[in-house]
Length: 275
Image 1 (cartoon, helix red, strand yellow):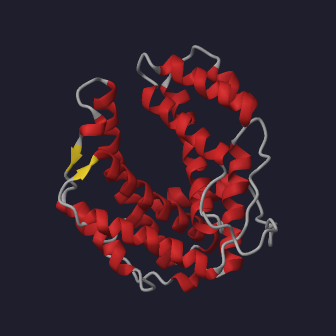
Image 2: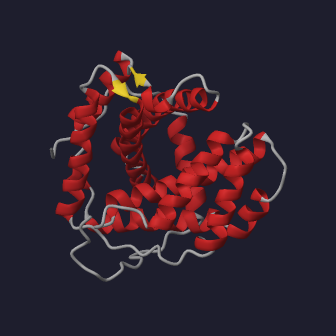
């Protein structure tokens, strides 16, 4: 991946008062309580200038600082307790880790998250998938070992702001891939998962912007994308659980995306005016 034009890490340009974690969650609660729009307004990437994108990234990173406590996580992973509440805590942790990963993908000039953050989320995702299965013990041990050896601090989470061109080029590249995948009548499970991840990255980008601005247009897009992400996520979870139970081989599985979801994905693609 190409690095940003500048090799100097970007520091905060403004102070976000209050808890960034609370701000993100409060905004998302508002979004989820709204009716789902049938269509969305045009999306103009020029509405995301660099200073705003820097603030968006700082919001994501500050929220991660608020929620990520390696010592508390290790205590949880070393416990034999299994409960819905504990799993919800892990899912909430991963949710905010994914917001930060999306911020790196979209807003950092390298367009990729630091390796330790990416690997952490991969292992945490595996634990969430295996939480109620016999594989849970192994997944917890692997994640705990990784945290102890590689993620006891937030060192290495520097940010190099993308230029306007880099930001827009990367966004449009991912949008084009979504459009290509959505054109297929049947998708291999891995391609379906990829399409869902790309759409989730876009959703989290609008989530960060909306949290800062409460712009009605951005909020409409965020609600539209949240609903789409939830629908696709349920299908993805179903495939993974069937694989864990031995009911199908994930690598050989094929997915037919329902016409309504295909229509909504197409609506999102066509709303973008900078392609």
